[in-house]
Image 1 (cartoon, rainbow, N blue to C red):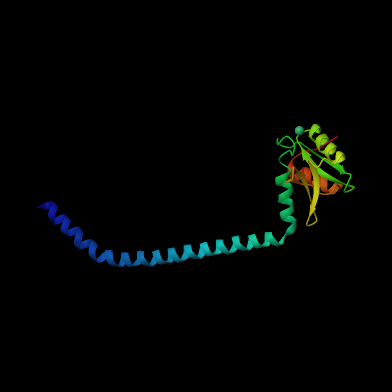
Image 2 (cartoon, rainbow, N blue to C red):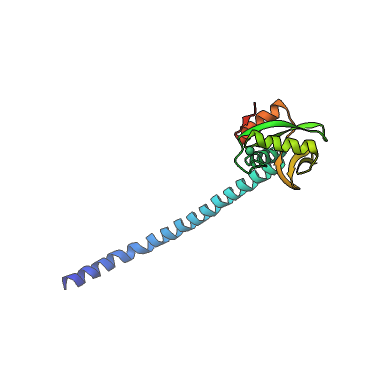
Amino acid sequence: MNINTNDLHLEIDESPLSSPLNDNNNESNIILILGTIFVLFIIYYVYNNSEKSNENFENKNILQLIQETHQLCPVMKHKTQLSTCIHHPKLNKAFIISTCCKNCIQTIQESFNNESNEYTIIEKDNIFILVHDNKEVQVTPVCSEENIKLVIHLAKTKLMD
Ligand SMILES: [Zn+2]
């Protein structure tokens, strides 16, 4: 009997409180949902705009290409260790390449000299690209002190001595 009256008492006590509380909860839920949508919209807007500004910043793309393609040696497919300028006789220009060792630089230089076309450099939209068996393997900037510093910085390689 005692338990029953307690139960009843609780029910009576709770019912007048529960409805304004529920209303408050609904309101704060709506605010929370609207807030979340607003935050998501802001994130979407900022993300979209930053992507667009990257697209317009052409230097950013070429830097990413240099960084990515100078990670892998075009000959041995190992992680690159060295960067250096090598001369392409046909184009009569020197270009910056990165390889895992001096032997691989030698391999590429000999191919250029023999015009074997196993390795060569092509120009595409003002960008020079090292090609191996007709496959583009490394973006090779024209040799200059400034460019080689940049490549070494991006690829985390060392200048060949
Ligand atoms: Zn090597």
